[in-house]
Image 1: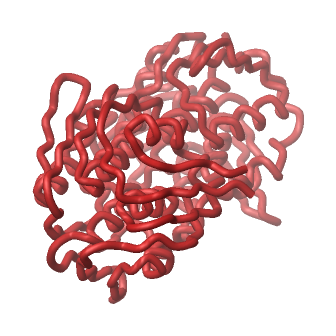
Image 2: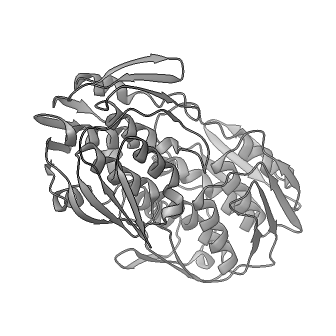
Length: 419
């Protein structure tokens, strides 16, 4: 198994360019199945989740080619349904459940194994099924497989989500894109990758309005066609580098970002004492001295993102004062603290709140990444710690961060990947 070895205490300085957004790529790739012609996607990140999706589509018989760096051409129109996607691949990632909405929307039937992904708490799909049923589908979950069938076709409906769910919002949008009539999704999620998916559907000839608000309207199209679409940049990758800059008391310019998407991150880093300077599509983060404590409460977008909570917790481990971190999204997202304690983090957990007493410094140790963002937290901790940190389980990190070792080395970090 591969591992990362980090010698901490090196100040990060320089520029880093951010790639495509993971959560957009894994929604738009299956959305190409709705189209009758080939689609070309650009700015696709070079991460494991994308490679898994590529393997799933190829195994399904969908023509897909990697024409150049970050550029894929997918011919959903050439796909002929012939059995379910391979279970072993589907179970490797959470976003494989978007195949349900895409296949149901295009062909009126879908059979997909329950997905895998990071173990960060209960992640039910009841809201997804509620949406499919409202559109006219018959759904059942049996033997670890979800089956959805719309014998009379899908028809637009008004759907109110009981909880704000990114996955359910996306799946309903996919299913409704070719449904007869208009679908209204209320209490919809507002994340930028939902807007990105809406832009893709519209570029292919669909009609989606309201994406980015809590009410989304999808007017079903008779057909969707080929298009070119560039994936937006990944603000969680950007946030991780911004946090690492503050943790190492560095000076880093993060390029190819949409600063508005990073407002909650920038605000919290400014609370810790950092300078955050926006300049077009880049953000410069400068930190002199020790960070100050800050309180965090994760919320759906545009609140502080749960995906940035874990890396931020590593920074707050050495901040001056007491920080309170409340996790309202996923109940299993404090597992990284078990590893951070090995490095000297002083934290106690009370329900869904972590109370962190900042220490002067962390000490390198052998630790294990238990999920994607926990791995990012351990990288931040290793960069600021005294001595060497060895991180195993980095296959989790590979799922969502591209060129991690090379990017950090270019910023002055001392680390190496050992295969």
